[in-house]
Length: 146
Ligand SMILES: [Zn+2]
Image (tube, rainbow, N blue to C red; front, side):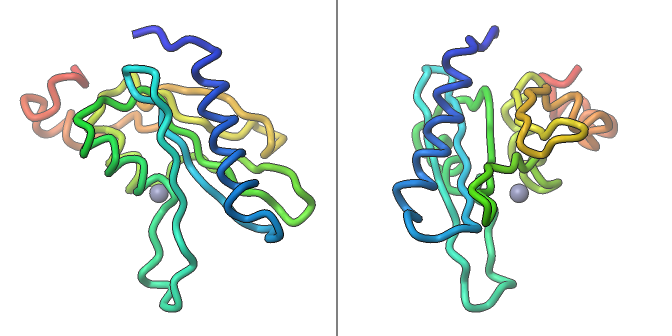
């Protein structure tokens, strides 16, 4: 599936929009957005729980919503608004890569540029997760990864 640039841009805009609307006076906040195969964008964010061990990634809410809607995720972006107002691109953590892997190796994930954390680049999950354990050890359980 070829993901159109304007849909990717909309996912980024909606991620930034959630940060702006939900946290108008707070710096240092983040959110995530996923683009679904039908063009819908789902956003999410995670509270700062009193017990940091209860923390969740911002991607969890939109990933679970995609499951609820029975839709495939085609792209994912996570941004953190720094104190100076810049939006830093957070590449998906290891466990979020695992969550996204269920949607196949062609999922696009936002990663920061090599020398500018505000530069947003799209790479495939296969690039971000080159040695996906399930595909290597149990390829029949990850048929999209062949
Ligand atoms: Zn994560």
